[in-house]
Image 1 (cartoon, rainbow, N blue to C red):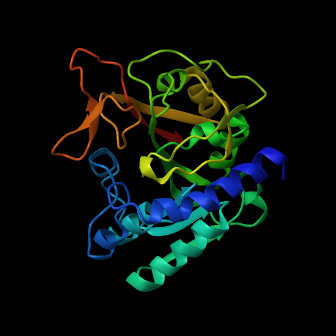
Image 2 (cartoon, rainbow, N blue to C red):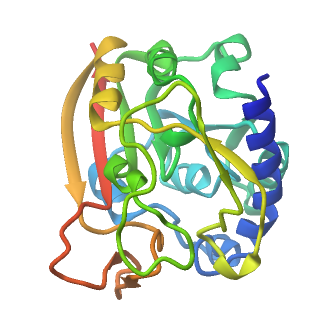
Image 3 (cartoon, rainbow, N blue to C red):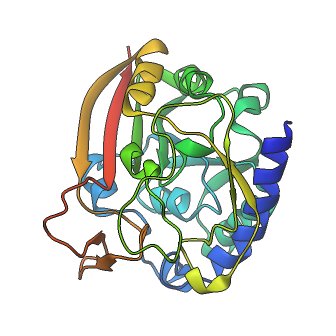
Length: 269
């Protein structure tokens, strides 16, 4: 395990408690009462999961994983944070949902899991934590059955060039768009789930362009079925965004049409 991974794991162990306490973003009690944490995009584009095996990569503490279980999927959630997986297992037991959770680094998953899946799912601020996107895509292909699909919903990679600190008042570039081998070291970034939590720490993240993402999947032998872009997102990435009645976040300035989210589906042929 690299120093980068160890630092990020410690960060996500600490962030688990902050996120679990957030009613605005995660709302654990609402989930226990029957609410889904899946986005409208998820539910529209990945609508038929009943009876299918689903592998959720970078699942955090499993609310999306368990939401898919409620829809009838046979789910396995994976995350490298011990605290997150421990909470996921408690939530599974409290809700009585059928789910399996594994605590492991994604790059070590082929050494601890033998199954093949109908669906690999990953969503919501996951790609920039990965140090090797080509290897990530090959691991996805490894775990898919022939004809199985990857479904990815993610923050738009172009957003990652902008300063998203809590005090910014407009869009200005701060970070690279194209990939660099060495990660960006970000200190003092507040969690989007609770900007008042004042959680400080060091994170290491990697920039990836849209072409990096698509070429990694194509290079792993996956066929791109569709790519969609949206002007709404699931969190307040920047202070100058507002939340609509549908729970989605958009730019306050309606003339700003920079996309916030994309989704794609790719099939193992």
